[in-house]
Amino acid sequence: MARVPVFVDLTVFTIREGELRVLVEKRARDPFRGLWCLPHAPLDPGEALEAAARRILAGLRCAGAYLEQLYTFGDPGRDPRGPSIAVAYLAVVPARRIPEGTTFQPAQRPPRLAFDHARILEQAVSRLRTKSEYSTVPLRFLAEPFTLSEVQAVYEVLLDRPLDKRNFRRKMLALGALDQTEGERRGGAHRPARLFRLAPKHPYLLKERGILFPF
Amino acid sequence: MARVPVFVDLTVFTIREGELRVLVEKRARDPFRGLWCLPHAPLDPGEALEAAARRILAGLRCAGAYLEQLYTFGDPGRDPRGPSIAVAYLAVVPARRIPEGTTFQPAQRPPRLAFDHARILEQAVSRLRTKSEYSTVPLRFLAEPFTLSEVQAVYEVLLDRPLDKRNFRRKMLALGALDQTEGERRGGAHRPARLFRLAPKHPYLLKERGILFPF
DNA sequence: CCAAAAGTGTTGGCGTTACACCCATGG
DNA sequence: CCATGGGTGTAACGCCAACACTTTTGG
Image (tube, rainbow over all chains, first blue to last red; front, side, top):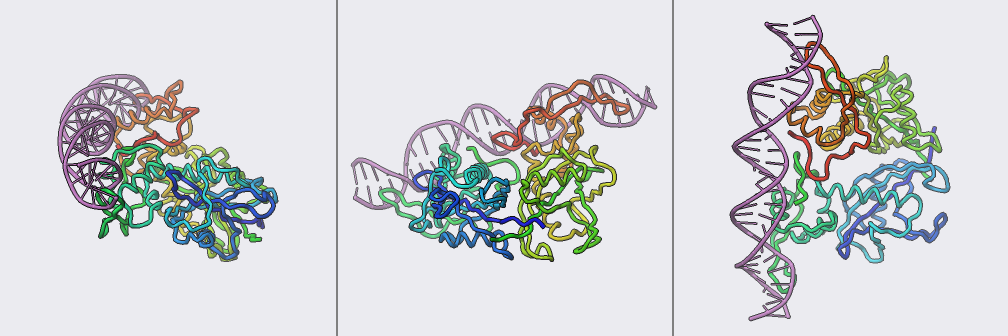
């Protein structure tokens, strides 16, 4: 029976300083000692894949983040120690929930990464950008409650283009994915902003027919 | 180090008798002896995942079929013999290329399946239908050369609704995914049909903005 | 000459984009 | 009272869905 080591690898994204960023760690051991890599861990026997991903997230103090399976990488050369499998997950964490001491690097121009992690990251970024066109995943970059301007800023980073404010608000509200909450946010010398949360039963995919963006 | 058995499982689809069908095998051994299951095999150490999928396809005499990775299943209870991982692939084979002696069952109302194969199949069908809205995957159900009416029939089965002939043809040709070939097909007491092939550099995803279907 | 599938254009309606100003607040 | 970001409506345009008849062949 074929038994190769099985790893769960994570791409944890956030948006900081107007840029998409990914969580990386510095390797303490060979191979690739001193190089950056994505957080990962071997699957415990008897542990479900998603459970392993959540275990790693908890270790990063990012429990509760949005999580979805990305892709499975099994190129025999991906680890110099020998054949292995990496089940990669994509996670999203709001910038305001990032714990101290965590390192996030620009996802589009990352530092050199160990193993096949550059390829994993590339695929994760691609998936994230594609899904921004037709899913509510981008809302996971925000801690509740949030303002419509914050939502627009997230979409602008992910889609990498400016969006029209009036059209954006009209469409976003029409989705039914947001619930307005009590209260407002005062953020300086200007009119206070209304606050929103993710609707309890928000759709994951946007609409059956047609795409919502571009505006 | 965590070493659990790694399998590659296949969902091989075709369209026959106006219905989406999936290739199944009868199990010759326990567990689940005599029950239907999806084709699968353990990953050889040192073998790439996709290479294993193609090896299984070749064993089914379906070499050359369209193939993409679907999802990885690792629920500890998926195999009664103990924890294991299944990397599932989705394949599409033209009805005219099906070898003798292969069993295809209706994909939407399959027989009882061993292991967690019912869940794998469910997810594969869902993915296939979703992708039919915005990708050229449905064209893989046809052996070249094919007629536009055949293409429309495939889309109608996958989307499960009738499509307008004139609108369908206009949009499909506008994609640039098809090349007209020499010759025509005479199929009885009616005007001969023009023949097409997949364009060498056909797009995988349809258009950047908007979706092509519905009509 | 009949049956059967292939092939072909136009129009009205709807949804989308483009666009500029007033509001509420803090300092 | 000034600066700052929050909030709002409409009109022109372009794209899409709806729709029916002619063509070519085999028997």
